[in-house]
Image: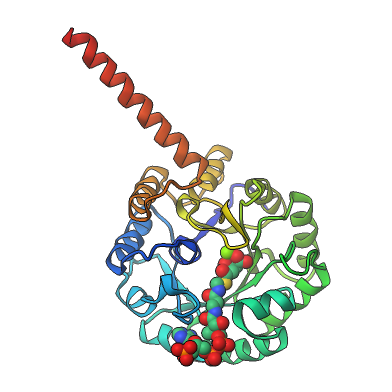
Amino acid sequence: MSIEEQVTLYEVGLRDGLQNEPAFVPTDDKLVLARMLADAGLTRIELTSFVSPRWIPQLADHERVAHDAERRPGVQYSALVPNRRGLDGARRAHLDEVAIFLSATETHTQRNINKSISEALAVLSEVSACAIAAGIRVRGYISVVFGCPYEGAVATARVHALVRSLLDMGVFEVSLGDTIGVGNPRQVKNLVRSLLTEVSPDRLALHLHDTRGTALANVVSGLDEGIRTFDTSFGGLGGCPYAPGAAGNLATEDLVYLLDGMGCPCSVDLDRLILASLHVTELIGRSLPSKVLQAELARRQRDLSRRAKANQTTST
Ligand code: HMG
Ligand code: MG
């Protein structure tokens, strides 16, 4: 696979990012953000989750966000669905893609969706079949593939079996989640290589968290192995539910900067993306962890100080 091949970013900030924010971002603001992300050239945007508002109150407005988000030609909009009820909501909102999810360990699956892995697989299999019958394509997520906060190390064979189960249900793409950001490039290489013995690379995506600063290194390892779809969150929005204050999802800006510099084509315009991240920064009232965003803000601050100094000199 050549590095010149297009890399696709699957933007999760409105879902994985906002679900971790203490503040509820008003629905109309979410709709503006969705527009800004499409303006920035993102072609796959996860808008929200059709989950219980008791569990995830930040996304309690899922019906309206998914229904009212302006559709753009060439942009695929998606949402998380845990069960039939979630799928019904996604259908009412006219989404043509949904994402189902479970974790590689029993404890994480139980804590996240209140089911064992086998119970979850049964529900997801039904959801997937109904979605596909309705002409909706289905993405699948597997969380904690490189390590679980409750059970520690995760065996490759376990991830393999779940990838196979999801693909057998008709899922078009499986996203491998480093949910707590513990993976390293060697683990990425080993897991992806092992999966590629039976799955083609276009059926896999990497969902990397930057909790310990390894996300970009892990992307490069994934690129080397032929992965071309990566999940990212604008500004690095979100946090890690198991490490308060720590960084969460890999920031979209940081990956776009890396890809631009490496000459890997991707559809995203960094300047426009930064506008969306600045807007959400204002809405949530805290600075975001993206390194590229921080560098841009520092540059703007420097320019302002220089200009202020120059004005002072001319007026004295
Ligand atoms: P449950 O308690 O087992 O199910 O929850 P239930 O059927 O008994 O329903 C409980 C309540 O939820 C009821 O309401 C239902 O009506 C309601 P109540 O009587 O308490 O008022 N309910 C729903 N409401 C709206 N939409 C629905 C729905 N279904 C039931 N679709 C359930 C099971 C899955 C619903 C629950 O556990 C839940 O919502 N969990 C939230 C899971 C979640 O969103 N986690 C975060 C996303 S996953 C993630 O971040 C990882 C990922 O990013 C990858 C990575 O980083 O690795 C994807
Ligand atoms: Mg995540």
